[in-house]
Image 1 (spheres, rainbow, N blue to C red):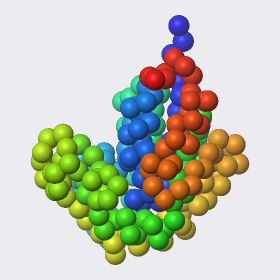
Image 2 (image 1 turned 60 degrees about the vertical axis):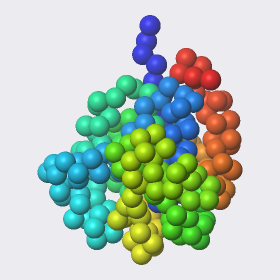
Image 3 (image 1 turned 180 degrees about the horizontal axis):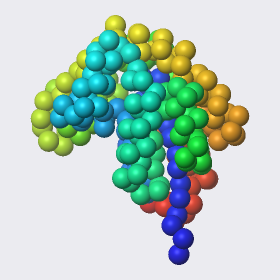
Image 4 (image 1 turned 120 degrees about the vertical axis):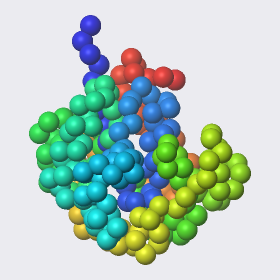
Length: 220
């Protein structure tokens, strides 16, 4: 039997809900979640060469250079089964073109959340760093304030999630990632979903994936 393939990615501005939607996707479908941000943070914690290099850019609110990210993500995708959801990459047109040369994607999901909503949301965003689980006060709050639901360990606010850094990231996103969206639109694989919350957007995403993912990799 031939190996089933399904290659997808999710786009959206910082704090648009990519982590939440991605978690719901991989909990519903047999897709491996590959988060560029989570993998980079693990490398930063471990003080690997790429982690140290990435850290100096992130601290300044800048994106990690294309050539570094392309090489890094290529290695990460080689480690997982050929049914995956890529989260946080590509962020530039050069990255998108490089990825397309190696992987012809089935679908690109774009979350369209107003920047004003994102900036307000970020004030209440906390994360369990070891697992990458994200919480938002008000609509995805932890069961115990400041604690991870699963382990009970403390939650933190990421340096790159603080409001002043987020504003810079949003400006960079608008400039660099809009061409990526247009790239996938021209490839006719782009599906856009608008809303203010993940709960509002998720049913639309699930319906779309139910119609295009092969039944052999559908969990429910």
